[in-house]
Length: 266
Image 1: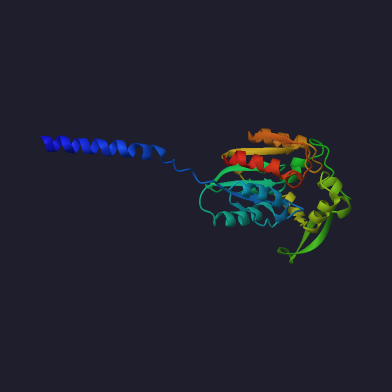
Image 2: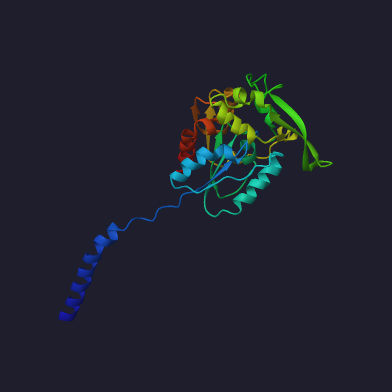
């Protein structure tokens, strides 16, 4: 009887001794998602440099894949190959034409989509319909600002394709009017052209129809009219906010853009 009482006393004492330790042990935090940043037309991966730096400073792993700019289906497949190398949750972010691409990416790892002044099509819609000047006037991405040229393209007819690009003399005033001439010159040096056919290719079933989405409208956009951006964001049911910025908000105001990405990540 005395032995039993002694064992009970020992167990009680050990329980009391370890209770504060167990209570003090922190809960295991969920891992932060990987942020994948997809650039748009007339830009390359460097357009995300400021946003990526801000996110990395806050502890996020950031991946910035190359977007081929050949067409939504082709480009979505390229982004999917990047996602295949990532384990764990992903927040997929896109700017401009990149929004058309991520709308055609379907991966269960993607827990949120973020559109930064980006196209967000419905099934069967092309990018040209989203800047229709009758429904959404105001885009200045027209000739002579918008130019075309013949380029080498292994996926094109006879190894060639017709690409569009922003004429250097108009780049600062049309694409990124809120950055300095020096910054605009660097963006021009990194500009990559978009296959003209990419603007005509219809979208498949959009991933935003089944994935939580965020949209940051550029209120001073001269490429995709703000009215079109608000229409697309509302149609998506996206968590929507606005910024007083040009089409290139990711370059001119990277901290504010990163904050929207972090909101989606949380």
